[in-house]
Length: 281
DNA sequence: TTAACTGTTGATAC
DNA sequence: AGTATCAACAGTTA
Image 1 (cartoon, rainbow, N blue to C red):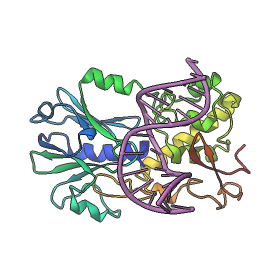
Image 2 (tube, rainbow, N blue to C red; image 1 turned 180 degrees about the horizontal axis):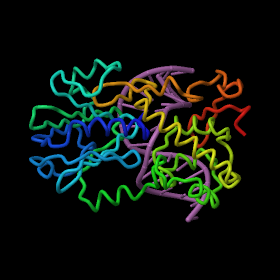
Image 3 (cartoon, protein in one colour; image 1 turned 30 degrees about the horizontal axis):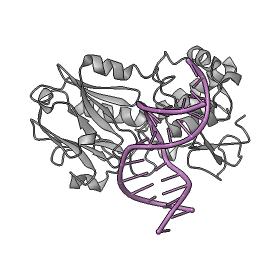
Image 4 (cartoon, protein in one colour; image 1 turned 90 degrees about the horizontal axis):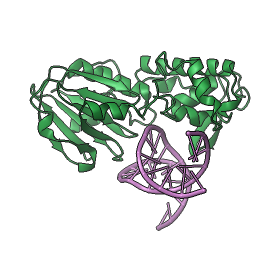
């Protein structure tokens, strides 16, 4: 599922191919997936593709196509047999687009296409002016990989909270871009229990935690995301590589790489949580 | 067959 | 305001 590394991988690849292209037509197959005036996004060159938190934005001269993939959203770009990136396995189903899960199909002036697929319909693409775009991004705290997301910042935000630290890390208004996979791994790397209440963490704990969070997310970006169930792929159908490096996520019953303890799985705030009961305290 | 589970966020109620 | 729970939806697993 797309977390920051997955969305960033998609952003980088879209940014390689989209700038300069003009949208010539848009087919909306599901009204829930798209809002905005199609006429407002055609016949003008795409400027750049940006990301904040898990929100992806295709910037046009006068407006923006703002995108949230939620859990099952995919963006696939096709131009004949041309591919961007390479070397990794490519999903074969991209040959058959649009599919039953394709919600939007953009056609560009060079004949290439962008497909928005979304099995569960939670995701969206919305045309927003600068002010609306700004308001959307203002919901989120600093990206976990930004310098602004410092130990001092997080420590201060933790002081007046008593939720389990795992819940706080998943709260995008505190720090943006972390999802279940990278939070579980970061807590293991920092040797902090996901159950620890935020206000009980020392500044030293928070320093270890923020370093671990940045490290796992940066590794995730380097490996171009994680694909645990085949759902996440980049714009050419390419799977990620982080799933082979996961520390605890999905490893219930297997040994902790840090101490050899047995990885446990419990629920925190309704979310499956993997951790090592022996070295995460 | 039915229920639980999947993950991100917004809405709602305390 | 902080916290907890549920809902949006569809498909897969128990």
